[in-house]
Length: 101
Image (cartoon, rainbow, N blue to C red; front, side, top):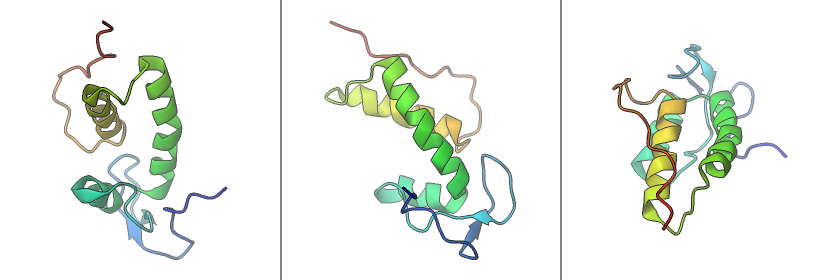
């Protein structure tokens, strides 16, 4: 099934922060709510967003993220921002899975 956020051929374009393609197909609408979704729509192409959606599943499974814990969403967001190259490198490692009680 096609990604509803991906734009059709000939639609808007974006200079992608991740793959550095000029005039890459843009997302048709923000993939997330709020300012982060608008930033992603403005800076990430539809192809790189599709790659992130596949990687996101692996991150959730490998780190055993539990979304009942607010820290898990923060960890996933940091992984997403690093994957999509939305933040400059800081040298600060991304945290692993939350501590299990």
